[in-house]
Structures are given as structure tokens and as C-alpha cells.
Image (tube, rainbow, N blue to C red; front, top):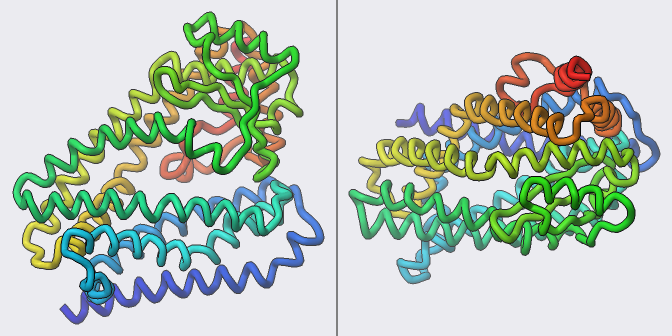
Length: 390
């Protein structure tokens, strides 16, 4: 037992040390992103790969180390003055808040300083901090609510709680798809109806596939980044075709049309529902594994809920390669849909080449990175496939 606690303590110390290192690095490099930037795609992608690997290891190991260490029970005692039914929500919301504070120097280094260093954002520091504060303000009550409901299921239904929690995943996924585009995303960006000659062309394209009544919006993506993107969000009457101003202002009409056709491909082929189903399946398996992990745990329902969540997180990380493989297959399918919809694969190849250059992406990424971390196929492969289709 002492060896296990020592091991968990070492992991927790490593996570805290990593946060301190990132804080020091941000201060050390602040002159770089204040006085100049380097458009070095190779260097940028090496940094992003290192950040991705360290992020997965840090978040997974850190969550497990805290959840299964005595620190979890010590922190839980702070909620004891509250009524029993309110303790889990307060406990898990409080942990989310503490985690957000601890992660702030990491976010400043990895999500702000790096992007400034390579010239991919002109966002001011106060703008970044404002967005981070909004994200935290949303995450704290949501985690408290979900965690509180999970803990209540643990307490009141000690045998059937895994089934109840698994059943609750679907409405949560559905609500997030409905609420996020209408109520959450506008907290971070301004959305305006798209005007000019591009709008009727995209409206005609959308009408061919039964979504001619969708809102076609321009988003001030340049507020956060110089990278270009477009997406289709929502379900049912909430569907929206969203184009970043970084895409509209720098891409030709034909290139934008191909990108939007690609995104429509996801919508028309019901990829949102497909991923809701896959996520539901994975979540159910992960919750079953979590139930086995805490079956003999005699801690409070707050701590058991936290430990169950840590196991669920680990299961999703183990299933990451399969989830990403499914995602990449759907990206290929959306590319094929866009070719059939526009009959202009050359515009698609030009769009992806421009996207590569503007986003400082690489034509090809290491195979191991694509397997473990990439939700999209490499742009080099996609460009080659489109050029072969011309």
C-alpha cells in the first residue's frame, strides 16, 4: 500500500512540476511572442506533437494519481459541512476549478505562447484569459451537475448505477449537439449572416442536399487564430453552416465551396449521429470497467465517482486509436462526397494546399502520430488523392 501511495505521489509531483515548468517557460519566452514570430511549419509541428503526447500522459496519469491517492479523500472533507446530497456536486465542481487554476500556466504556454511564437494568432493576452475564464465558468457547474448525478446514482442504486449512467450518456451527447452551436459557441465568437456572392452559391449547394434552410454564418475566427476552418453544427432545426473569416477572406469561392461541401458530407451522411452512437458504445464499456474498478471501494460516493471517472478517462485513452481511425475514415468519405457534389477535385486540392500553408500543417505526419493522435488523414495524402481524381 505504501509503495502504491509513493508511486501515486511521484506522478502527482511530476504533474505539478510540469505545470511549474510551463509557467517558467512562458515567462522566459514572452519576448518571442511579443517581438516576433517564426513561420516554421516543421518546428511548429514538432512542438505540437510533443504537447499532444505530454498532454495525454499528464491528464490521464494526473487524474488517476489524484483519484486513487489519499489526497482525494482529504479534499473531499472540505465538502462535509454541506448536506450529503450536495457534497458530490460541490466536491467535483471544486476539483474542476482547482484543476483549471493548475492548468492555466500550461494553457498559457501550450495554447497561447506557442501559437504566438509561430505567428498563428494575434490574440491579446487578455482575450485569451477571457476565453479561458469563460471555459472554466462553464466547466465548473457542468462537471458538478454531471458528477453529482453520477454520485447520486452510486449512492441510491449501488447495483444498477452503471446501467443508469450508461443510459444517461445518450441524452447528454444529444443535448451538447443541440445546445453548443446555439448557446455556447456565441459566448466566444461573433456569428453574422454571410453576405456577398458566396452566400447564394453555398445556399444552392446546401439546397441540393436538403439543408437549404440552414443558417450560413461567418464567424470571427481571426479573434483567436489565423488558421482557417469551416464546419456544420447542430441537429434538426439547429443546423448551421459556419465559415471562419480566415477562410472566407483568403480562399477563392471555388475553394470555399469545396470545403463547405466536405462539411456538408458529414451532415448529409449523418456523421454526427454515427459519432454519438460510437461514443455511447465506448462510454458504456468504460462505465462497465469503472464499475468493476470501484466495486469494492468503501470510500464516499464523491470519491468513488471521481475514481470511476478516472477509469472512464483511461478507457477512452486506450480506445483512442480506434476512435481516431473511425474519424479518419469519415474524413475520406466527406472528401469523396465533396468531389461528387462539386465535380471540382482541383479546387479541393488547392483548398487543402492553402489550408496546409495557412495552418502551418505538414503534408505528412509520422505514422505513430497519425495512429494515436490524428482525427484527420494527412493533408499530403488527401491532396494527392484529389489530384489523382482530376
